Length: 488
Image (cartoon, rainbow, N blue to C red):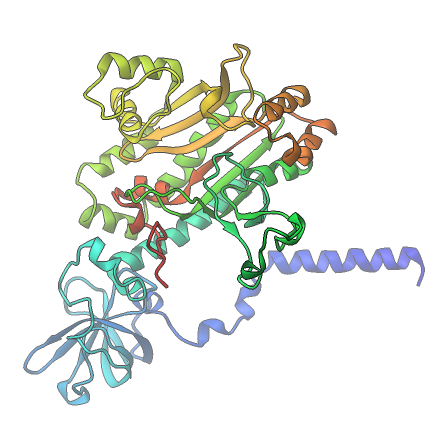
């Protein structure tokens, strides 16, 4: 076949593929006919046809002639009310059991729902002993109690709502970056770099190699990868390598910190949203991206029924006002030096005293958002000694172009820096902290076609804490990992 014909064939294939993508190709899928979700049934126009619905019972209300069941399959915050004749039920139908119901969908005569299912047949798929089941009907269990049952916690109304919120929030974040031309990158979970330089990393090795380690082993033979390897604390360094080719990149994945903290603000495993942008030279430009990300995604999520449920039943009544105010106002900005001054002159009996060069504690961060009117505030130009080696040195040779975004109730939510793109400056800094040998590849990025760039990272769980008003970070993640706690 000639080259011209091959080219023509390729172009035709590409055109056909593009037409397929533009078409509503999902209509060819038969998946939607396999089973109907509770959410889809609730939005169905009643046609008196027989429907078959499966799910778990959230309530069983027995009256003399009628029994009302509330059926949920997790697809919606709202349950489907099932109306049953007592004759079609047996003793296995209890709160928490899994059932399959066949019946006719009719317009509801009761307030609270548009439609209800008149059951004609009910089958118990999975029994549930209401005595042994740790979650009881019509009882709101403390969040720390539900954490004791991580394998069953997803069945609680709060956790199913949270999981739906996490799902939508994830999609919303991806949509934000995709809309603005960023490329999503899968950065590695296993790495030989300690990005933050703090040493709080989990070192990993195959269990089969651990017993064979002896002092006589060659250094490279002690390790599976020939050198120490860790669970990632950040995908930033890897994003920098890709940003030097694609200009605008981001990731969204798990990160790990071996910080021995049992406080309600820390996790050993959590999710990070990180972005890296080439050709950015001003910290102000980086802050604009951070502010836009938080406002655009946050305003969208506030419209969710599940988020409204949290604000109605879990959050302090005033927190919704705090979030709405935060997302509608221009974020404040102040330098680290100014922030220290404000903390020193106000000094409302902090547990940790403040002086120039110290790292802010949670109490300082929350107070700074308070004194600017209860809205988010950017703190910029930190001392070089308390920020990672890759932060770009400012002209004063004391501070770096770093920024933290502090939000009410949570404190630090996003941290970012302009990266040091000057070879000589970065080379000297790595020498001074004795890391020159470990980061030859990082210096290569500055040696071959270096470009000014910057980036930031936002903790996904802290983001959810801020939006939902949840005080303990372990309650916004399905399976919390912290010191002495790795259940399942």
